[in-house]
Amino acid sequence: MKLLNKFKSKIFYRYMIPILMLGIVVEILIIAPAKIEKSKDLALDADIPSVATDQNQQVMLGVHLVETHETGKDWELWAEKAYNFKDDGSWVIEKVKIRIFGQQDGSSQKNTYYDVTGEKGQIDPKKKNIVIDGGEGDVQTLTSNGYLLKTKKVIYETDMKQIRSDSEIKMFGPEIKGESRLELTGYGMLTDLKTNELKILDNVKAKKTLKQGQLVTVSSQTASFNSENYVAQFHKNVVADYGSYRVTGQQAKLEVDPKYHNVDLVTISDQVRLSDIQRWAVADKVAIYTQSRKMVLSGSPRLIQNNNELSGQEITFFEETQQIQVKKPKARFDKDTKGL
Image (cartoon, rainbow, N blue to C red; front, side, top):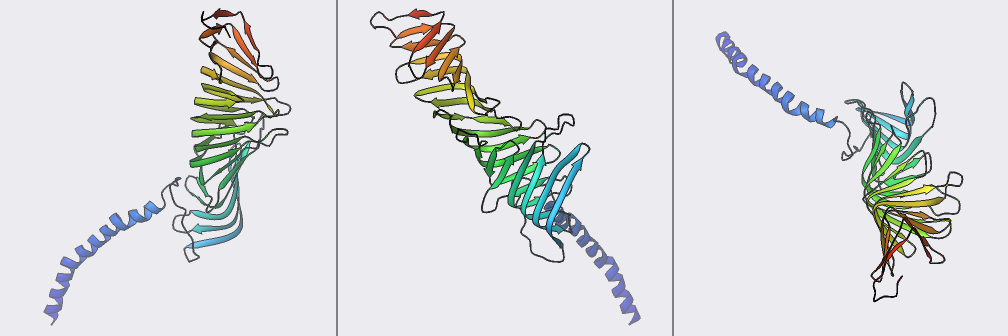
């Protein structure tokens, strides 16, 4: 009997121990990476996990968190409820608002910030990146100078100091007395907190009714704004409709007067073409003065109507009187027509 037990013991150590060791290796190579994968860095396409209270979570109510750096606050966050996962230290938050601070100079103290609100979110404990999801509604981002953006999901990347979204964007300009808010749609958003520049990345369409009732619509590939002023810029394949005129070019800028913040100048430049039902013109730049209701073409402007051509140093269109004024004019007339 002892001999039989000794034989069984030798069999166990010879064959079973290697099998158990192999099982441990399988656990390390297959199961452990699956757990590591769950705690990867957050990204916009990552789903925020659903939560149910269990022994692996710590639940807190009325959460207030602050992240700081050497020159001040990076962000400040409020949430109705937060779940802390013990396995990887990540946080899932509900009914969340986060104020993300722009570049703080120290000397200028511009106090630029971005308030982001949403139904739920997640915080990466390693990089402090934050994803905010709108759930059934929208994530809303309100800048300190009054721009409001709505989208489905945003991510704040702490190291890059950027707020990003890879979905459809609805944007509303600041409320300005005497004018409608700028309304804009597009796809994708990138805000660089080091420069406080906000970019809409594709398929931009915007409209605004000015103080004197003129409707301006603009489409372009991209658009950019700055959270320290009220200037709007549009880039690449710009098409602007203003009254009965259509103006195309590669760059456009809506500028405001510093006192009342009304749009007082719209500039379109680079390969400009202006047209209405009667004529068309080309120039390097057209400046639309909304208060005096005139358009000034400069940079080798040429006006063509009925096969007649008028050029000069500047060509000015007056909206109300329909008159045209030319500085240093040069004309070429078709002999079969009666002129401009």
